[in-house]
Image 1 (cartoon, helix red, strand yellow):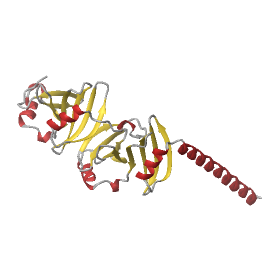
Image 2 (cartoon, rainbow, N blue to C red; image 1 turned 180 degrees about the vertical axis):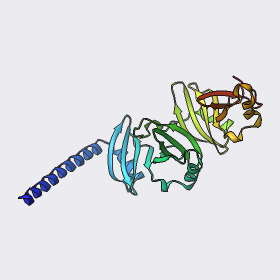
Image 3 (tube, rainbow, N blue to C red; image 1 turned 30 degrees about the vertical axis):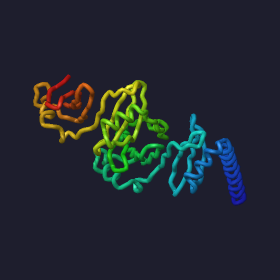
Image 4 (cartoon, rainbow, N blue to C red; image 1 turned 120 degrees about the vertical axis):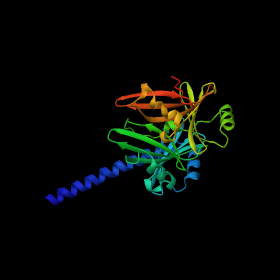
Length: 286
């Protein structure tokens, strides 16, 4: 009796599983049928070995989630079949050695690696994102292929990042011309549009720099990180001034503006922190 009951249970489970699989397959088939033929053709041409493909619609984009070479990825196409972005879930071992070396040399190298992604976008070079965590803190580290740390983003919402906000923006002629003239031989790796400004990340002289414009395409400023140990003596010597005795420099940026350049220093003393503007001669500006 027990053997018969078990057999019936297994048979019922198999029937349920088969029914569910059939429903999922039908849903996937119906979703794929709703995708414009131009999109499916472009996807097949770009990823001929893709398998386990599932389609979803996100606004004006058709998104294919698929597997290739045993790796999970998602690709974004517009309704005309133009490819815009692919996010690939990489194992750490497949990162370029330059990126792995840069990560091991950065301040977050002891944090736990939670996820690794490669972002490929139309008109831009690939970016590698290493998501790290330490207790309740999460940081996304963005590296170029040669291992330059482009930016770090605090990410504590514990949500899955499908990189929808990283769909490629097109630089205007005004912005491109300005960057080419002021930062020759630089490469644009990211463009973000905020409510009141446009932020353009570039790589120039082997440094990651952020060039910021207003919505009228007028240049506001450019900034980049500076290692504290590489600050000019005149700048770091502000720690000898009476109001900053006992502080240490936790972070430093160099800021270029049309009105003049300066260093933006973040000073810490116990639980207190303060930001100070200092010109290249060590004069405090604020």
